[in-house]
Length: 158
Image (cartoon, rainbow, N blue to C red; front, side, top):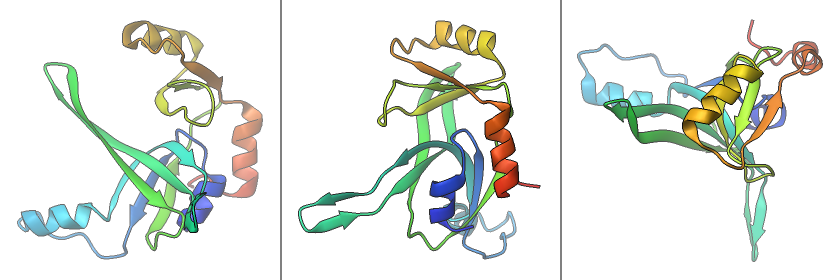
């Protein structure tokens, strides 16, 4: 899939893989493997941002993947995000979408809200929020209709 198709069709909370098409290098090539992983990895879709115009310059739409966290003594020290423009030349794949009944937790309502957690159900989302403190959080339960629409459109990984 193209980056534009991911932006248009992939649901927030989905695990998205991306690749430049080159084969994975052997583990012994550490530096080259690290460079390869910058263009061949996966992450959770946490944000979609519409395009904008700044003066005469147009900024294309984009989406952001959360690739992981680095922690020390159970405290997250660094969160790793990667953003892609819809005109990216990488190939993208929806590896997994949120299941029906799961609850998406957003940092706050509106377009500026970012997905911060995917819980299995509403009680799990409430419990997670009690420990992580997002006072303006917005919860969205994934419905069976949303999951069925993804399957009909063919955007869920097989």
